[in-house]
Structure formats: structure tokens, C-alpha cells
Length: 359
Image 1 (cartoon, rainbow, N blue to C red):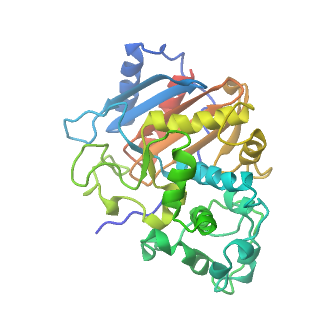
Image 2: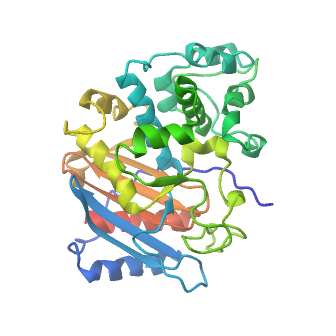
């Protein structure tokens, strides 16, 4: 059975942009997006632009499966990969708001059982270090499928940092393990799995409909089918096509463009002091980057002239799908793009689609 290894790269491009995008509702935008899909040779491509009130422009082009006949739609579900990280960070912020968690709390206090069989330094890793990738934990496990179940996340510290391991906390090292552990400690606070908590404390309050793992029914192309970096459909769209559930808090959410936009709009409002899920002070922490890495809590921070200054950005991929987002708080808008192909073609197609919308 083919088992995929989690992959995500945080891309900060869009320095130079194409000409002005079509106006909302203009069919020429769909044609331009279709041209980008053909240029970058991906089976499907979807993109949307939104402001503080909601989506102002969106389109989807191509097919759910290469060689198939079912076209994608603007309501299809897209795998977001590491876009999930900002969601997990926001979930933890809800506990900070309630006074049940502090950013500087160490793992030894929060999940002492998980720290017992790990390197002593692991107990000193703080919540904020996990979310800013400054824990010193490695990026991935050699075999994520050694922990195929969500309930096994408590073993991650032992496997990632066994006794004798030297952890260089403070330095940036992009770590999927760190975010999986962050999801685990949230579960310990409420004695529930992250999968249930993200629905209860984040998605439902924001009226977001989302799921975890592969989108669609196994064996059918009722949703975008995953494709490898060469554009070939994977043999299956079932569990073996995605990351194991233990990786959920780091990258297994799927949803529609509209539903992701609701999450992004909440962060836009929070960044500008508007009414949002959390108080403005907590969004300031979530959006405050480590000075050396320019990475905040699930967001990369970049400066772009078209954004009027600072913007929040991230990409996500499980090697068979790709998703990208750019948020411009100073201008009050954001753009997102998704495709059902991984690798360089998927990344380039999403980057181009975002550039088209930014214009």
C-alpha cells in the first residue's frame, strides 16, 4: 500500500505580479485561471479573493481527476495541508483566552507523561516555541505510519527526542512533529481528541464546515482526486493517499474555498482590531514573528508593497495537493488558491493564481 510522507514548504514569493485581475463576476477571470491551469499543467485549479465581508471573486477550472470528465466546482473540498497549522495555533489561543494555558507554559507541566521517556530538554519546550517552530524538534518522523492513530500522539516526544537527544531550542526548524504535539496538549486540556476540539472550539463558532483526511468517498471522484508531482492520479484517494491521523494538527484539514475564507477573514479582522473570535491582543501574538525566522504561529510574515506593508502567508501540501494563502491586513483583503496536484507544478499554479487575484 502506498503511504505518503507529509510535506509542506512555506513559500514567500509574489514579489512581481501580473496585470490587473478581472472584476468580481467577470467571466474573463475564469478564462484567465483556466489559462494558468493549462500553463502549469495541473488537473484542476481554484482560487478566490475575499475582503472583510466575504468572497468577492472566485472560480474553479479543470477536472477532479486527470483523464476524467467531472469538472471541479467552486464548492469542492480542497486538502489544505499545513494551512491546518494556523488553525491549531488559533485553537490553543482559545485556551489562553480562558486562562487555562499560557504561551510560556512548558511541556513538562502540560503533558508530563509524554515527557517521561524523552530527552530532559523536551520538558522545557514552551507552547510558543512549538508554534513558532523553535522547539528544536525534528521536522518529521522517519515513518509517520508507525503512529497511524490520532490517539497515539502522546508517543511523539519519545520517538522524536529519545533520551540522549540534543535539542537546540530557540533556532527555527520547521517541525510537523511540533504541531502534532501542540494538538495533543490541547487534547489533554479537555480530555478529547484534537479532531473534536477543532470542530467545537474553532470551526463551529466561525460557521466553518470542514473535515480531516482525504476529501470525498474512496474510489469515487466526487471531490478533487489527489495527483503526484507529475500530474498522475494516485492509485487511491483513500487513507493511504494522505498523512496518518497522528499528523492531523499539522496538516489534514480539507474544506471549500468559502469555508477557508471564513477562517482567514477572522484573522484579518483580528489583525485590524475588529470583532473576531479572539481579542486583538491574542491575534497580535499569533501574528508576531520570531525575529530571526519571520515565522509566527502558523503564518509566515512578509512585507509586500501591494499589501501596504505586512502580510500573512502560508502554503500547504501532502505531496498530492497544494494550497496557498496571502492575507493583507492593511488593505483588508486576502487571496487563496488550491489544486489537486503536489510538487513544483502545484506550487507554481497556486502562486500564479494568487498573483492574478492580487493584480
